[in-house]
Length: 424
Image 1 (cartoon, helix red, strand yellow):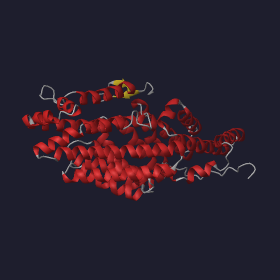
Image 2 (tube, helix red, strand yellow):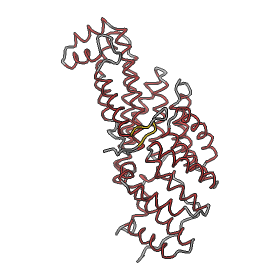
Image 3 (cartoon, helix red, strand yellow):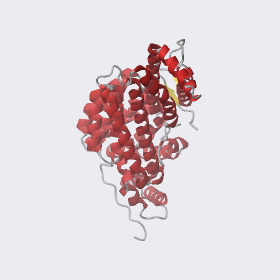
């Protein structure tokens, strides 16, 4: 169940995120339960009903008698699919499983396949069918990527995750190829964005950057700004990952401007955190501290739970470098957030595990540098408790290919002091 989290809606009004998500999903379901163009006849649901009852000839008659209206309604269905696919991104703020996930959207899209296919046969115009297929493949690709991340994040099972990522790439490449035939720039940009995400999880940051860069070229051809912002955000994160923070900032600053203009506060929080991370890598700790604080505040306002914990953790790192007394309470708050119900909902188990381990090591180090040996020993003891009886767990976790995506996280600039494992 999603918790009651405040989300800053467009226009500055506040609604709970759980209510917002319910409204989005109810809108999606109702849009497929009735004609996308109200007042027009025959509604697509009538044609669909005929097909589901194996009354194909009646469905063909309805299409032939109303071809212009049917095509208009099919285009409306495609717009609905695009809108609801993009809306699923909101779930990432509160759930690593993306709430209901992609399956309901995929099933609804498949339900309309026969209508689109029949319209193409009867009209000789197969463009709407190809557009639907491109979207179906994109949805399947995104779903496979998400499933791979869940398998990695819950079970540390690269053997199960890798084929899911590879199948995701196949679906996304097929979606892009179909969209390219029609110059469908929205799906082209979206498919490249999802390819970049999948390649990142496969540990191929350079290829991810290439995919994001290509996607941005198509996004620039779109009338709306969402993908212009998202692809710049992902490029910024990828460049920070490969150790090019200055290049990252050239994409992140305009991304921030785009999301401010759109009043998309959850995405603003993500950009501000990534800017703070880039400054950490540049060792501009005061700038990092400032932007991470802004990210934290924006995350709290918008209900972006994922950013909230990560911003706290990175603030602790920046505070350590700036020798701020707030470093310890900020790191403690970060660990508490990851361990709360909201943290368990939004972070996969292995992220919560390694964050606790690294956080306790950092706290032990900070306490030692402050001369508080008793506090340092307390955190060291908690660190070993977090590893459990398997003394190799710390290295096993970090050596898994499943961990690759988390290497984009800022690392402590001061090397963490190795903690000897008792009995080794």
